[in-house]
Image (tube, rainbow, N blue to C red):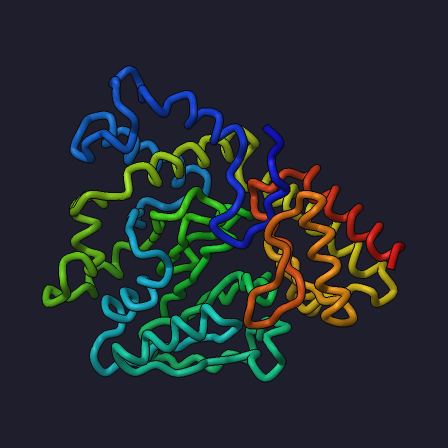
Length: 360
């Protein structure tokens, strides 16, 4: 079959090698006579999947032993609530840096749980850039500082992470985890919905320093308590078994390519193709993000008017490009080029952009 040129923002493209392996094992996983989604989560087969997935993630991201890896449900949106419920202790304040829609939502959820304040924001600049480290007004007694490392709607990304903080750094990495090397020790907690770079929707990865688990109060509902999930090895309730299995396959694929260092090189090459098409268009395409804040995952741009944008998206769809419309809140165009989007698909999109400009 002919594969679409999938530039959806999420759920997003999965590696073809992963889909092929899953198809091969679909009816009979490891000689069990069952599909993965039929396995008991208490079975030996699934426990091996669960353990292998954690080991692969630890290896790829070089996660120290004093961190716990959790596989949870509810997406990043549930983490917006779980983080303050577990980590925002009475009498403390949570600091948030606002860089887009999702950081706003995280901040709004924290306000429902306790005291939260905006430490920095680029909202007045239409979220075209990431605040500098010096612009962050961090309180020494803050419970934590929260950032969103990549902003899918506005196409911006943190390229210099706040380091050496006096409080834990919490990061929503839903759209750029596994896309580049990380210094895990710089973070108190990292969380990411899987449906962009890690696998299909359904599972959320949380990487948390074990010291922070002590903040999880016993009065919290069990399903919202990090300590409960850590103690039960993410098996407190029935997990999204198929999503965890796909996560394992994606991590195996990433390892086969050479890990996050090689993925970063590929991602820079892909993004460079599209930004070159924008920058060399004599203003025909206008990038939304300022150059020093541009995302390697989501390339956002506009055309001169709505009619031209409509024509661009229509011709792109007829050519086989999927998911290029910008988010409904900002309009324009957006190409999401996560890890699994092949280089040749991005090359074809860049060629299409150049061709459309020449014809219009």
